[in-house]
Each structure stands twice: as C-alpha cells, then as structure tokens.
Image 1 (spheres, rainbow over the protein chains, first blue to last red):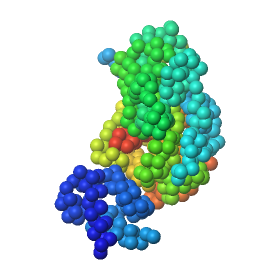
Image 2 (cartoon, rainbow over the protein chains, first blue to last red; image 1 turned 45 degrees about the vertical axis):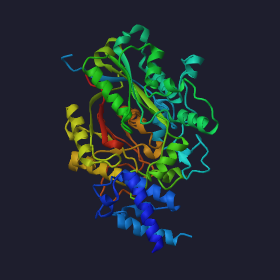
Image 3 (cartoon, helix red, strand yellow; image 1 turned 135 degrees about the horizontal axis):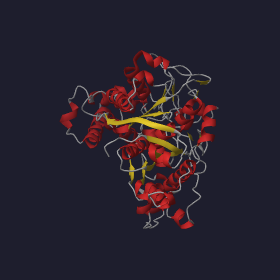
Image 4 (cartoon, one colour; image 1 turned 180 degrees about the vertical axis):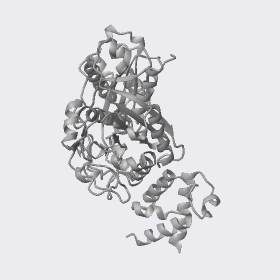
Amino acid sequence: MIVKQEVRSALVKIIQEQTKMEEAEFTHLESFEGIIDSLTLLEIVCEIEDNFDLEIDDEQIPQFRSFDDVVQLVSTMVQASP
Amino acid sequence: MTTKKRVVITGSSIASPLGNTPETYWQNLCRGHYGLGPITTFDTSESKTKVGACLNPIPMPTNLTPLEEKMSSNLSLLSAYCAEQAILQAGLDFSQEDVRQAGVVMGSGFLNLYDLEDFYQGLYQANRPASPTIIPLNMSSAPASRIAMTYGLKGVIKSVSTACASGFTAILDSVHLIRDGYQEIMLAGGSDLILCKTIVHAWERMRVLSKERENPTMVCRPFDKDRDGIALGDGAAIFVLESLEHARQRGATILAEIVGGFQNADSLDLVKPDSKGEIICMEQALQEANLEANAIDMIYAHATGTRLNDVTEYQSMLAVFKEQLENIPVCGLKSMLGHTMGASGPMSLVAALGTLKSGYFYPIPNLNRLEEGVDLFITKTGQTLSDVHHILINTFAFGGINVCLVVSTFRE
C-alpha cells in the first residue's frame, strides 16, 4: 500500500510536469484518449522508466489508458523489480 | 507568368551507402544490396542500436577551396557534393546562364547534427569556447547558401524543413517557382546526417527503431507481418530542375518530367499519420498531374517499416487506387537505405528515374510475409516491366506533413 501511494505521488508529479495539467484534470479521466497525445504519453513513459529504473515494453504502453491504470501497472512493476 | 511552364529534370545526384553516383546506386538497388551495416559514426558500445546506413565517408565536392571547405559544415559539404554531381550531369555552365534566374532549395529534417553534437560536447565536457563560425555554419540555410555561393546563383535561395518530407517540399517548391515563371533553373533536393549519438538514442527512446538492432536483413521490413520499426540512415540527393523551354534552348538531355505534386497537412498529431490527409495528398498530386489513378504505373511508397505507418499508407493507397492497387507495382527503399529523413523522398526519386529508364521493378528486401489484409503487388525476385511512364512517390512525415510527387517519362 505504501508503495502504491509513493508511486501515485511520483506519477502525479511526472504527469503534471509532462502535460502541464492540474492533478484533478487527469486523475479522474476515464481515458487519456484525445486528452494526452501520443508523444506526450511517450514522454511520460520515458520519465517513468528513468524515475523508477524500469523498462516498459512497447506492448505495455496501450495499457496506459488512464491514471489509475498507470498507477496500477507501475506499482506492480516496482513491487516485482529486484 | 500567365502560362504554367513544364518542369523537367536534367541532372540528378546521390550520396548513399549504395553508391555516390545515380548509376552505382541504381545497380546496387537492383542487386538487392544493403546499405545498412555497423554504425561507424559514433561509438555504439553504450547503444542498443548498432546498425544504420552510414556514408563511410561523406563524399566531398571537388570545387571548393580549402577555406570554403573549412567554412562548411558536414551537411553543407554533403549537399555541395550532390549539387556538383547534378550540375555535371546536367551539363550546366552557370557562366553562360542568367544567374538571377537560378536558385537553390534544400530540405533537411534536422539541423547539422554531427557538428552540433561535437560543439556541445566540446562546450559542456571540455569547456571549449564557442567558435564564431558555429552560427553561419549551422544555420539551417547554410547548405543552400554554400551551393549558391559556389556557382554564384542569385535567384531564390532557401532551406525548408518538413521532417521526412523536407526534400520533397524543396523539390515541390522549386517546381512551383519554375512552373509559375519566377525561376528557370533550380537545384533542389534533400540532405540529412542523423547518425549521431543523441539522435539515435532519442529515436530508440521514441520506440520507433526496429528491435532487431544488428542484422541488416531483419532490421527494417516494410509491409512485413513482423515489421517492428525503422532503421536510420544518412544521405542526400539533389536534382537540376529546369523549365522545358530552358532545357531545350541549351540542348540538355531530359531525364524525366515532374508532372504533378502536392503538399498538405493532417494537423492532428505530431507523430501519428492520418489516412485522410495522405489520401487527399495523393489525389491532388494526380489531379495536378492531370492523370487518372489508373495511369500510375508504379508507386514508390514511403514504407518506413513501422506498425502504424505502413498500414496507414496501405489504407490510403487503397482508398485512392481501389481495386487497381493490386495491379500497381509497389516498392520502397528503407530496408536497404534506412530512413534518411529529409533525403528519403529525393533518394526515392533517383531510384524512380532508374525505373523510368529501365522498367526494372526491384523487390523490397526483408519483406517475407505481407501484413494480414495488405494486398500489394510486390516482387520477390525483381522483374522488368514494360511501359513505365508515370510513377507516384510518397513522403509522409512527422507533424502530419504529406508531400507526393508524380514523375513521368518526358514526352513532347
């Protein structure tokens, strides 16, 4: 649970920085589709990789549909990483 | 300026890993040779990507003084080499021409990256002071200016940048300048040097590069079911374009005619292509050429080898050519040359001139199994076609910028 909270806070910062949106503008979105363009999403992915020292496969990027999805996916990866 | 002039090609040139003359380049394309190999332009030990299409070395012009060479960037020298070759082939002697009627438009997707990367390394790692020449050498108009100064051309001189369509934008702008009577002779084409560490790493992180990073026979596979991205390459190609009247007046050999072209924008996404924009671009290019879709004998596709681009281009071609598409030979160069960005369109045009001359239709190396639902007329072994008169060439760039040209055999 602590991991997930920490991941969430870090992701809020990353997405705020990359999208220039306020937290409330993206955390409640059902989908990033049409709100966050593909290139910005890619920047977010790169920032997540750098911040959490993770490698995210291309096939996982389509799973980044909403903020909750991202939190879930990254938390799982962080917990699984050595 | 009331009558639109016909625009012909009287000189061509190329700098590529498959040869630095159009003849050698064409022969190597037909033999299915790979221009892709180990990247030698920087130390790849820390890079996932080991393969690219390097020039090894950058060919140099022979008509610059040592000082002019020193005052030219690598990109300017590459461009000047191609300009010299194209002018030689065209048999042009600018001392006999009205140089106010002659210009240059060059297209590059990127700035002069080799030199800039070196500059920044020197500045930040070795605290090397900035040279005052960095600005004039690296401004994006430097290649066009270098060429213009070498020949004393006093017409329209400019550089354009529309990502991977840059070279075709340069050619199309030049066609318009001649067609509408503003210029008689234009040197036009594209050049890009992108195989430097920063850019290769950025493309890697963009997840656009093929995951196969070493074996050229697997790296870039346009339209293949298992394609997984692009390879990168350096290169340049420049043409001498003239009004038909001017070419005739001086008894020039006419290689081909640019009968139509169009540029438009999707204006939707910086990196994702959109079929609607591509369709309009191809249709308008055909309309400019005054040709029906069924008149096209061959298509040089943009065919980058990415999952999304190739399918989008196929859908666009299908929408334009409908059931006729399955009868139109389609080829692409990027599995042999990598993606040379602003030079990619002009490099396709050099190859298209070879096809117009010989009728030869070569295979797309690395294309083993067509993507499901993609039905294209490709060749596995190469074949000679009869009556190739009109070729459509596509360039579809980041930023949603599309440029298509139609090049034809010259007929009175």
